[in-house]
Length: 212
Image (cartoon, rainbow, N blue to C red; front, side):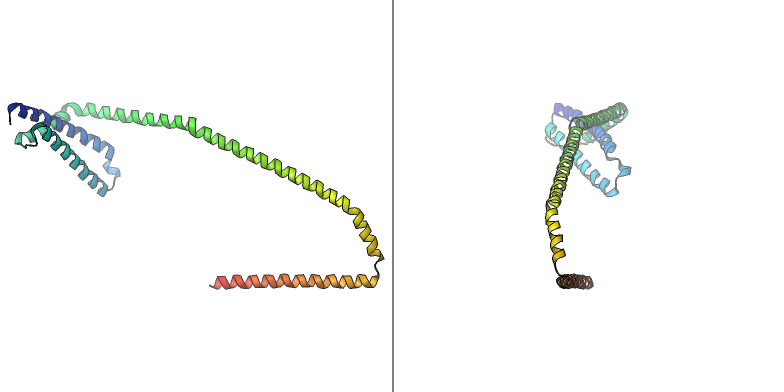
């Protein structure tokens, strides 16, 4: 390995060490360990360190074809320490600023979508419902009015037939009226019996299904 390659390797590993400090702070900021279950934190930690190991190995592979030396670990520690002492404070402030900007942008876009898309759709749906209810009330009122008019016409038209029937009923002999009265009584009793039998059968069926 040439001196140039060793120099590039040292600089690259110092950069990887600084990147590792950035990644740890970013990971800790978004993970929020105190609010997560321990097994979730454990799985995330394993995945995080696997990813960082792959990144470091990929950089090392690109610089010196993956050769490991003791000074590489020293370079990693130096890069991490340089980040902690020189750049960590500024990076954390920058990270919080970016997070707040993203949150504010999301809230702004949410309000815009709500005002330009959701609200108009809600107003349109409400207008359609109001129009349909108005149409239904108008149709219902019109049909009800027409039925009342038709019923009045039928009642008025049936008056002559009613008067004729009353006159004919007066001309019917009392014996026939008596027999007709008895006939209708028996007919009424028959329908009452059928109705009672129907209710009795229905109650038996319901009790049968309840027992099952």
